[in-house]
Amino acid sequence: MLLSNSPAATGQVLAPSRRTRFPTPCPPAGATPAATAQAEAAVLPGGLRAESLPRHVAVVMDGNARWARARGLPSAAGHEAGRRALEEMVRLSRAWGVRALTAFAFSHENWSRPKVEVDFLMRLFERVIQDSVAEFLREGIRLRVIGDTSRLPVSLQKTAREAEEATRDNSQLDLTLAISYSGRRDIVQACRKLAEKVRSKQLRPEDIDESLFADELETSPAGEFPYPDLLIRTSGELRLSNFLLWQSAYAELFFTDTLWPDFGEADYLEALVSFQSRDRRFGVRKS
Image 1 (spheres, rainbow, N blue to C red):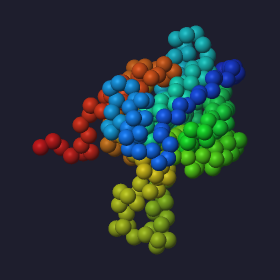
Image 2: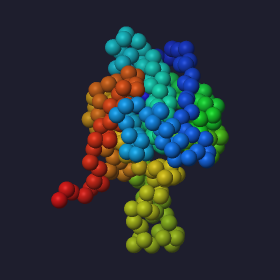
Image 3: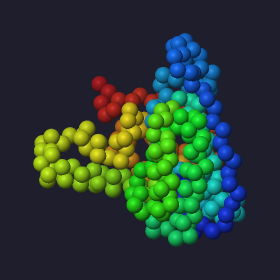
Image 4: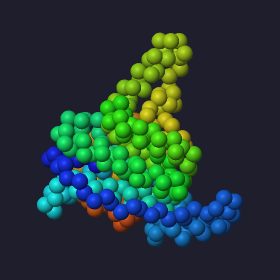
């Protein structure tokens, strides 16, 4: 995640990262299937097959502070480098035809971290969103922010709401930032919503099924792609860390020792090629 297990970030203000320029690989509206296939073939690197790409990729971005510490830099520098890695992953997802990307930016548990570090990250999140809206509008990227947003600074809440509204009709890539997010909390709040509907007699207990439950999760507005097909975790840690616990029930998992700021095109390609080699059975055992 952007905030990894690290010492407190300094208040040092770093130069803004470069703006990412997104390619426009998708054919225009009304293009023939042959033209669409040609466009896909032109942008997909070797080893990837358009028909078996994951539609939804989730990523636990971990290792920023270790990356900075290894270079004798403050943690803030690692978080800035992590921002650039996320920009690159968004660019590649858009270019290669991944339809949804969910990034774990800040866990609900990380509010217990030193205030100076948390404050730096809140400012960074706000700046990232502000800097990206114009690009998202040009490239058809829809932004959503999930998590306990009531704990975010008022200015960040406002920036997130405005960006979500501005990009709501975009459809090339759904980008979700999980800020102050907890998978357990997400499940609990869904249970509370259903309990309230039962209490007010809008719903009978026996009517509750997986579909109704999923509708109450924070990811429910994600439309066609609420569940990740592939979940990537960087930095060598082998756990989900309370991220998308319900939604990832049948996700393929990919763990890499690469620290998040170093996660680039070759790493993403490795994860996608690995996904395409999996035999997805969604809980059904081989006979």
